[in-house]
Picture 1 (cartoon, rainbow, N blue to C red):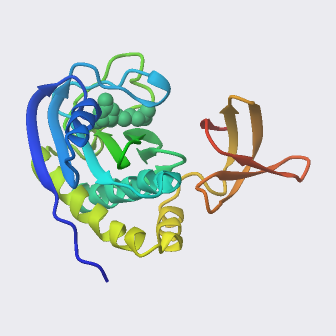
Picture 2: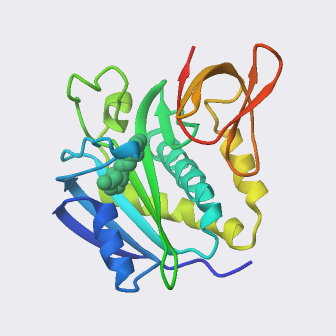
Length: 242
Ligand code: BTN
């Protein structure tokens, strides 16, 4: 087994986006670091969407040097599992992972992950994690689908401890990654999966597909079994339960 990685934490009160700060730091050659902020002015989600980044949430980005950018999706999976484990441990809630990059509690989104790769002389993975921790309510546009650890458990959490716990869990999974045991990461993700076995509608750039989520393949794509019996691989997109 390779050695556990040491991560250096950088805390900020307010920042534009922890992913942007992480990119600046990676450009200076820093890796094995975690950028944490109490709030973000310009928090972003997938597809350029805005990420609600008010006080009370955890906003953090892990920076790792990455030799295989094609394996980046595993970073998202490792982060999802690390967050789900942390929520289960600290809040005793039944957190589950939703393909491709969310964590849910009681069918609502509690966490989103945005992994970005920067390529240059060295490649870096920026794994941005937005976890709703102590928020008591959300803007009305997302109220029906978002939740926080506080809303679901009625408890408050120390945000630094939550970030430390996520990194400790992530680190364990990263051991598997560094020795190339991607199967272990997939097995763990599947164990926590909210997606597999359900009837799903997937919206992708190439079209909309409806079918049963039957598997996750080796490149982290979602495999749907369509009504006509054929299997359809979904590489990227949003999914909805139907
Ligand atoms: C999504 O669900 O679309 C992903 C949301 C990712 C949000 C996190 S918060 C920390 C990091 N900084 C950002 O600007 N975004 C990610």
